[in-house]
Length: 263
Image (cartoon, rainbow, N blue to C red):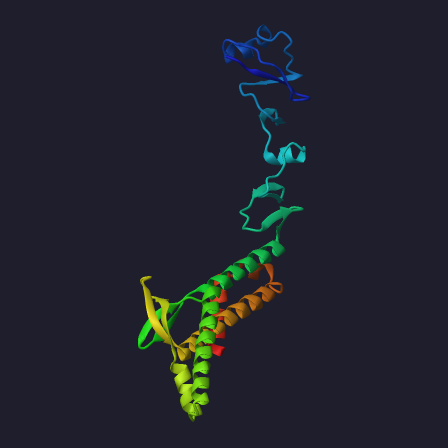
């Protein structure tokens, strides 16, 4: 078996002599290590990486002792508290600097702003329920949906006006109220809706219904933009604790619904 001999002064390893038994070594250490001097050396069965002589006994140095000696670097989640190295659980955006827990406030704000932006985009595109002739369908609110409705309305109105001009050229008298009623009742064939189960349904939709649909789209888009902008600006004035507990989805949906009720 081996033992390890250390210098009492430097605590460096001097030798690793092979011995028969600990008893025989204790009785006659020079038999196994001729230079043995109990004033200079100390022995142990254990080889320590960072030995410390504590009240005549060898032991491994603590992290605190290594830190003081410049042999240990604190981990990103460690700090010194009452002379002891303490491991702390850091939340997202927390970090330790100058032995204090700090918070990356600007990075948190930017992340929340990105979440609010994504919520706005998702909300603007989210289908809404729309009723035509007693049946409820789902209507998307994508840019292409808004663009198609605008084109269809323009086409229907133009076609209707051309028809009126033909009647006027023939000398027919027109009743304005009836003209407006007829215009609003003018239909576009096979507008595509969806049902709850994702099935496509093609329905004839009147000018009146297209206008109502456009107004809902406008309200959704406006409310979603107001919600995002208002909440994004409010983040700058929030404390760190308020930012930690800020739930973008809950706050966004709450403000969106409020804006929809007011519009």
